[in-house]
Length: 362
Image (cartoon, rainbow, N blue to C red):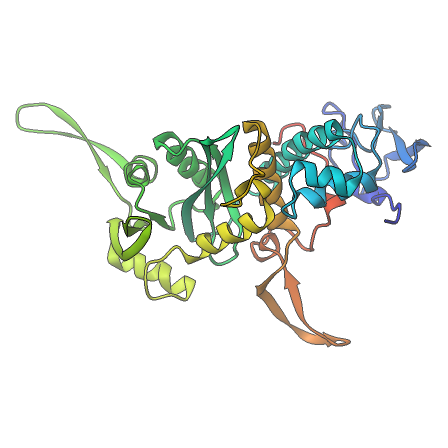
């Protein structure tokens, strides 16, 4: 891998009290010195006088591992390799891989929190998938919310499959949407989605009856609706799929389905995303001995794979035809983040690891 440093125009002062804090394309930074195998730049801000490493507030800050080795380990972890498999491929120490896995997971979550916001999604699909941690008796669930049009994973919650997970997931989606009052939510038959949807997206009104008793009424705005896909099983075999409109009007549901290009209520986009995730995450493989030994490992890999899917993995269904062909290239390949308008190019693994987390972000 070529040792190319990020352009100076992409860097900014890391002093929150500086007037040029987080301002890129500025001329206030100069190179004080370079150090290490990767020729890391030690910078000085001419405005406030702060000296700092260009790695400050990134995953690679205060680590001695080379960038090429960090990228190799990160790529192994997002390509369905277990801890021991990554150790063998990267020829690294087991404790080094475990530490990097933990730090990569933290970095991925911070990147997601810093960039995935003000999402212009009108339809969101909710679902959960499970894996194990510690033993085959301890299931750890990943609740996900996905825009079926851009394929962007808007929200991720890791933990137990309970009412609290559904509540966190729906509240997080509400905070990340550009317009939460224009939304069709589609979920499976997990009852907690239905109870929480009314509480989170509904509007509360106070009324008084003839006896003077005050009641609280929750009304669903016209712009939002919630549809449910219920699967019926006989043993382990699915025998029927039923759909219903839990909240909102049929007109609003049909409007959302038209945006998706569908005619029936379904969760096909999030189900397909679950399959892709299981093909990348060793701890999500259904029949495998490579289950996580700790809940922390499940959290770390869940966030890393989700961020790689959003920013680094192109999807064939998202490509758009170029107005003018560039050589033999007719289409522009896009990632979910590009389709959602929060990225303008395909991010590399090193770019994700180098991303500077804002002091007030993540």
